[in-house]
Length: 192
Length: 192
Image 1: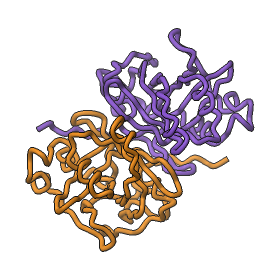
Image 2: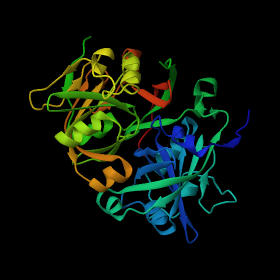
Image 3: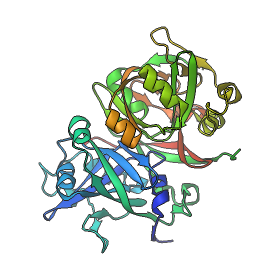
Image 4: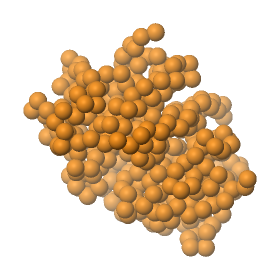
């Protein structure tokens, strides 16, 4: 079964990050692309779908999205754990060949210039909602989700189904340093 | 091996929520205690340790922490999945006996009046940093972590070690409705 990148209804896009995965953040400006890892990305609203992400001032990706006004959040997989750890450890400022070195393969959809990372489990295309006080004081950025897609092998009908797929497609959850967890067993509670 | 609630160094408190668990939020004001579940809780800074949490205007817990200026974030376990789902589904506004009905056992530490939920894997005591624009526009609250503790069976020396403990002590990660995941396998990457 191959990856099929299927659209996710925007009202359900929060479900792609609701379980707290570590994400990849990508952006582009004036021909420069960058990708970084972020553990501090979180849902903020359902409709219109919004999310927050914390981006340190040292990150080149932050500068790119501040200038372009657009970015993507994507959910990397266990198979991408080395890539995720590397793009979170190396800066484009010191390493102009960062993306090649980290073996990041980018693609673009026709509707947007924001680069997306191949091989992820989900992609959320976001428009920056400028909030200068949040951004300067807390390094906190707010995005409105304007497009969402997921790999149908692990997300369909508005739900993740990691339990039925290759364990290499599970999401990553960072603790600190080189210490991560994969998402685990499904637990279903009856609605009362 | 019994639960031992050990202090966590504040500079490492972010690690208690870095892997994206669904949390319980508790607060108290003028003798009224409440506890709710929240999937949208996220690290914001290392030192001083800060976090964000999204709290809908309908929640009584929000009113209590707005009035008292303090709250706690705690990491519930797989064993507490029913409790977590119930406190996230029932409102104290309509059910004055909510906490008894959800079988929530509260305790307090000597240093604070904020009620804490027994049986969790970790507890973060927070002081609200008032940001009226964030709170009104986005339902987004910022807390500075002023105390942190964890169950030594699953967190010690600054790291989770779910893999060495009872699976019932793993953290919960909510998707939507009654659909949750437990945290899964540890993945350790070499630092380069």
